[in-house]
Length: 366
Image (cartoon, rainbow, N blue to C red; front, side, top):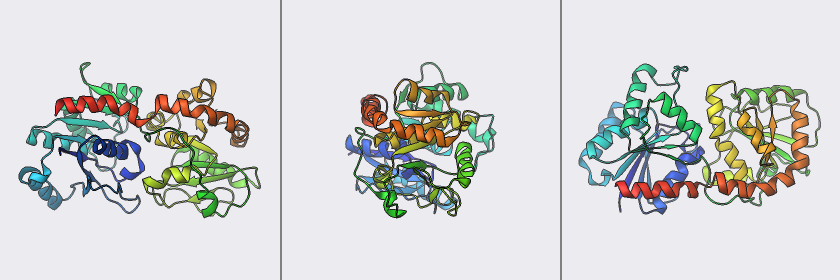
């Protein structure tokens, strides 16, 4: 079987569908996969329970780089038919592998590194961005998480109009379906039937901080709010008087089960932050909720207005109004909104549907 390398210089691979679904879909379409990622103590290691997906450490140290290139150059089991990479360092390493083995490079644009924000961790922007642009232009195609995200990337990386691209959303495959689950009720010993309002993410989003602070004076409400972390240690103080916090990230194969125990999902992006603005439109949080037929409260990006005004699958929050009123409104409409989610999800977010055109292209170029 032909083998593909995925070079992800990321430590949160298991928490994002754009990584896990890609690996699984490549295997389902007849490839073996070697996935390289950066291990860390704050996120679960990617676990696929599939012997056709091998997991390796992304080469960072001199020894790791020596070992990596020795295998790539001299070991038959590390000969690939294509290589994928994430910006910036992952895709530049993929570029060098593609040149060395004379194989196609696919640029997986999970992020766009903006010149206005140069303080990226572990990156010398002015130096490394040139390598990123070079690799992107060399790539046979780019996988972007949304059309607007790709248009932004095209501008930042000065890509030609002829550059091939595919839009594959950051979302789980399959139809929207609610699982039978009491996960959060069980771990927090919630015995009543009040709806659960769930936020998956970190406390560092501005609107998440706003809710976190403003609910400290809440007493008893007709609902519960739960903040669940995708990265250990970044969710807030467990002593919050109203919000229940869980800072233990779940492996990807349990995410749907946990999310299905909620009633409303919070998507807390701020249009005033350029990183949050684009992340909001490619949000795995949104798709986690919608995959489980859970309506969302989304703020404050204009894009999310359609979720309420056009699609009736969520409630828009401008980030200023009293969140208690917004939550109450969402609860009153949650059954109605939930019924509209399956058709919307199949049209806009089913990973398998969007992967098919790319899969045809991939098999043509290798």
